[in-house]
Every structure is written in structure tokens, then in C-alpha cells.
Image 1 (cartoon, rainbow, N blue to C red):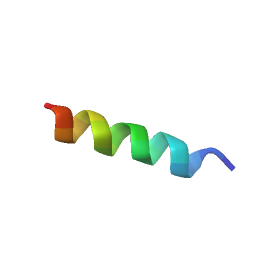
Image 2: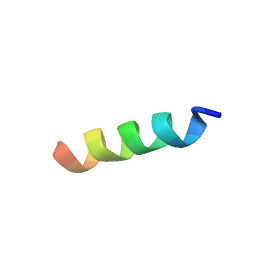
Image 3: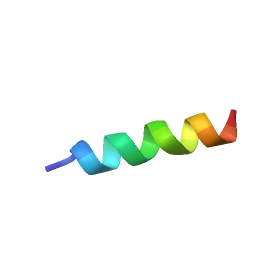
Length: 17
């Protein structure tokens, strides 16, 4: 419950880098 959102945020930040 929220792990998916956190993982997506990290992945998006990694891709944005």
C-alpha cells in the first residue's frame, strides 16, 4: 500500500536523471 507509488517515483526520478 504505497510501495508501488514509491517505486514508481524512484524509477521516474532515475529515468529523469
